Length: 129
Image (cartoon, rainbow, N blue to C red; front, side):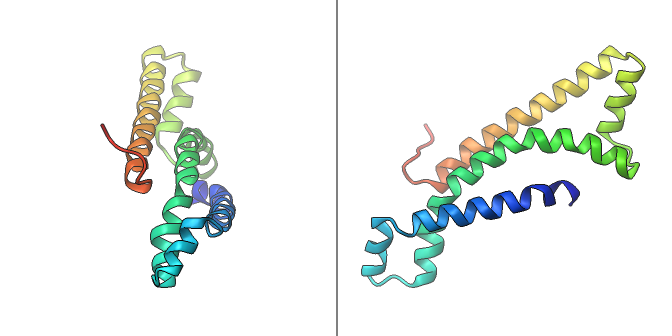
């Protein structure tokens, strides 16, 4: 929760700005002219198009969330990967440091792969192939 609150305002402002831009597009006016309900226009057409940059920013923020976990664990005295990483650095335990870095790198790469797959579900112009 602590780490999520930092990014909540950013995502809210970004979503609002993208929705304002998206709702003025021609295809939104066309959907309304076809007689679609306002909820369908907003959620199916508008929000779906506006989520692409938000998903991109989330993929970039995953590394920051992992790094922020180290600080949060220290502040709240929680034993976890961050505490393990700091103890490994302080005791010069190179295999443990390499393991933590490798785990973090795999975590970031998997998050970016998930973001790329989400693009295909969010944006109909993107195809998985």
